[in-house]
Image (tube, rainbow, N blue to C red):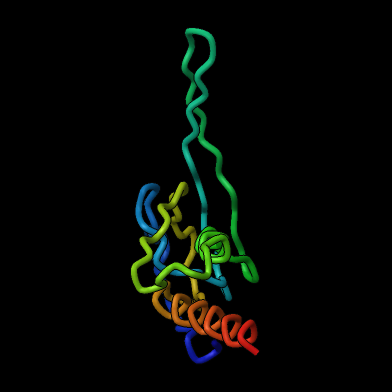
Length: 125
């Protein structure tokens, strides 16, 4: 798995991911600040309100963890090569220059697929 981690670099004020885009990687921030924001619409009795939630992500924090949750919830009988990626509910934008390690979705699929194969072989034994 560690060989699958790729260093990535972003300039300040750079969009990494837009709300509605497919999540194609899990990122571990090693330096810099990323703003994570989402729009939420609250519909009440005859009223609609929209609010924006913003979170500051720094060194040691992950983003794209929805990809982790999504893969672990999948049934082990599913063909991992045919999975469609989850969609981001957040927009990620750098505040400063950012350095991170990325685990790309295809690499993660391979790791999860190997885990499923290992689980299957243990069940046979």
